[in-house]
Image 1 (cartoon, rainbow, N blue to C red):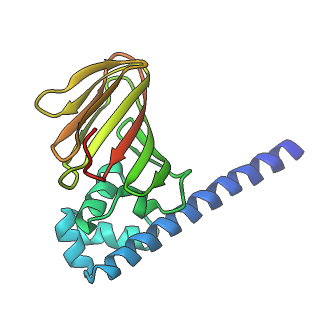
Image 2 (tube, one colour):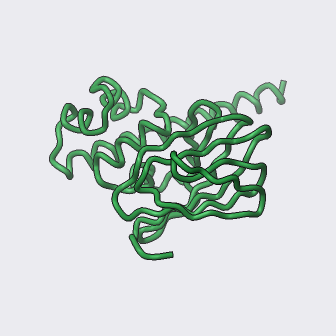
Length: 188
């Protein structure tokens, strides 16, 4: 009986933790939208998402996809991590891909990205001057600009312009990447 009680408490803690992360995300999106002086309708239009989706996110009722969060961040002109705030253990998932913010500092964000075998993530351009640095920890991926991705295998790295459409494609096995998004616009 104690095992069942213990598992129930653990599941309750997980649900509570996930709910807390969703509430923090919701607050951050609303706060940033209001700081920019945008209505729900205006931000939804800029991000290319429905007003009902944005409203549900701000109410903490919907789990966002990676694409939705990036679209909101880009529409607000803020780094992805600004939406997540201090919720660094928050993992966002979408179609066999998950992204988790590891660290952020002035103009730099570091993510852990997991891709299931044969997963594809097409990413919209970030603001002008953004660069991405990717270290493949496990597996092999095609990564880089949408029109000319490069094959990168475990313990190899690549740097490319993040201000162009870009792609991450896991090949025949799952892949694990460390992705550094550099908003500083400096040369590498």
